[in-house]
Image 1 (cartoon, one colour):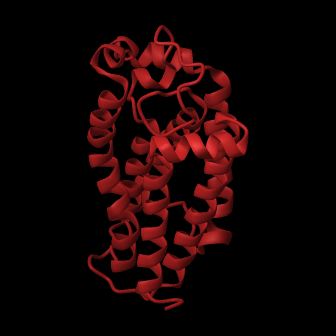
Image 2 (cartoon, rainbow, N blue to C red):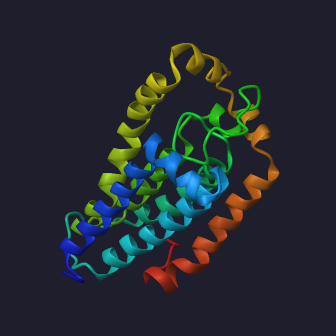
Length: 221
């Protein structure tokens, strides 16, 4: 299976399955007890996600090329223009207390200063969806579709599923209290803080630097 499309399907399935498992409240409580709290869980979760992401990318690089659509010159501009937003959303989502979605958990959450949650309650899912969409545009092969389409589907359906589940767990009144903040992008960026913005930019720079040696393709148009 190594090097084939089946290997890629397996890698994607394990990645998505791991995220479904770690988002279950019962599993998360047990994992936090073993890992020393929400911070330990977040660190372990992030490391696992990076390792599984690396596996998916390696499986995609090794998969055979079966072309579905050709690449136009303008398509190569989409990833480098979209990825700065992806990196900021990912960094902010992984470091902002969030009772609504995938992330470090609710500990320390302040509805008066929700930060990136003023833009979206699901910043990590948005980051995944934008990343998948931006990379599907210039990569019109079956392997890319296997890799990116499930992530895009998760980013589209995940927020609705998580909102419904968290409302049931928290109760409508508590949900309403926690979610009682204005959707204000300017205030959200200000509350997010310059450190998260800087770390997002640094992540973007690192991805640009590593893209060609790791993936084998230049990120530049």
